[in-house]
Length: 450
Image (cartoon, one colour):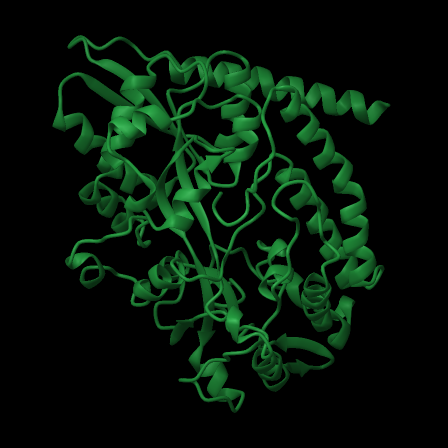
């Protein structure tokens, strides 16, 4: 009971803080020139924020009716939800693709269908997988900014030191396992190097089943965590801790520095290969520019060549919260961002690829990431992967993170751990669907871009 009171008090304090923040950010001083001020909250900082500021400045200079006021806000997803429930949201919020279902379910964002149609914005303008992040239950709730896809990043020197051809990274998961065994190194009983470690960086715990062809649900109403392919995937994931000892691997990881540091495990030569996103080149250039590295499609199970070129996708998005004071003016800016010239200005500034189906001739030529075409092409493959599109995903994801810990520690078998998540989450999904039916919303497949 005490913990509940503490949690309630903490939530209340967060709400008060968010309300104070919201009022200070969404009530800007009126402009003397009479332009409508559109407030825009975004998650980015540093060079990523500066890239969007350039787009904002360009928009503000392009016309004299609207002025977008850009603010970099930490925990923007949580603060936007709280501000919206308090009736003082920003006009635009920069969120993540997996937030769409949760926000739409909670009536926290407005649908963009009509405004997008009037602007000529349609699915075929985009790489379909990215556009589909923005839809839920047959409606469009967001539009893209910068995309993300992942690939295997490999350290050529460590591959060579391990006796592996540095110009031929592993193509199958069996080869990746073999490389790990060859690269594995201990000194005085302590691990000092591994070829690959599934829990580094540990951001995509949901992916190990789908990489093996597993499905978490049927796309509508049934959770299928115990899919045999999921069991196989999480068994493979857990085999690293099992092979070397859970405690020994954990001690090895405790010596890793932060992601954005020179002591990052990959940049510090502690792991030869890592699953990472298109942004990784930025941090290598910042912390270890002399690193001899490459990128390649993440390996697939040897018996499943149909799963080759898999890539985990994510997307930064723009939404208009319910209660926004200037939704039409907000959409004018969102529409501006979708123009190829402006989207490429943003994506080049953040050193990412584009979510658009077409890019200008000079986009790849001028791009600082030497592997940018790989990431663009992977995002178009038929084997891209993304989290289930459901409002319960935040809780589901937390359960998966806990599940992975139990598998790596050996406290549960993969099959038992997957079954426990399925047993816990199915009633929660059922309750979510009952609520939607009560509102007249019928279930439809949210798999494969529906």
